Length: 203
Image 1 (tube, rainbow, N blue to C red):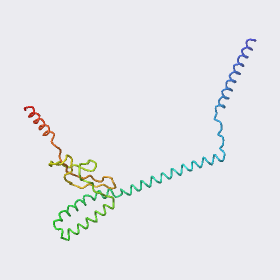
Image 2: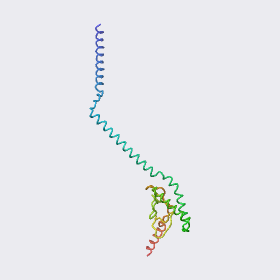
Image 3: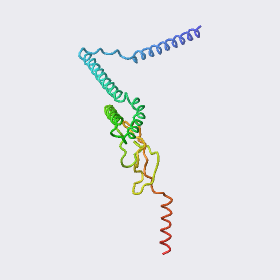
Image 4: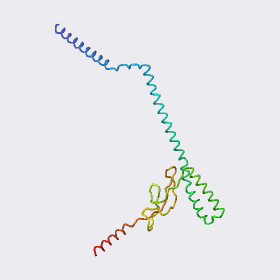
């Protein structure tokens, strides 16, 4: 009987100890919970919303400026595709005018020259300019279609323009097709050097 009482006391002590552990854990969980936010004063709340309004206004202003720049850029190049498609027509017209120069007193030539002047004014108003074709070949604006030898010409120097090139508002629309001066033949130069060297050695 005494043994049974002792076992009962041990079980009760274990249960009590377990309850104490659970209580401690619950207390720790409560202490770890975040403390409720302290409400802002009216002045701090007003400052918070004022700063948010300033940031929103600045973002909106930047958006408007960016959209205005993009719209202006689109308007500048809105006719680029149309002008590019018309360039071959302008080329053919210029060739016809060049052929008609043989009879400059004729009404046909005078009429074509007048139309050519109007076309040039129209293209200039759109921001179109011819690519410069004087001096040395520039791969950014020129397209070399052939090479020719010319005495006294520097290698890469533009000798003749096969087709005019154009830029639209500083953006390349069509490269100028040009013929450039051919550089000295490396093989000939090397052979000449070897011949000179052999002659010098023979002396």
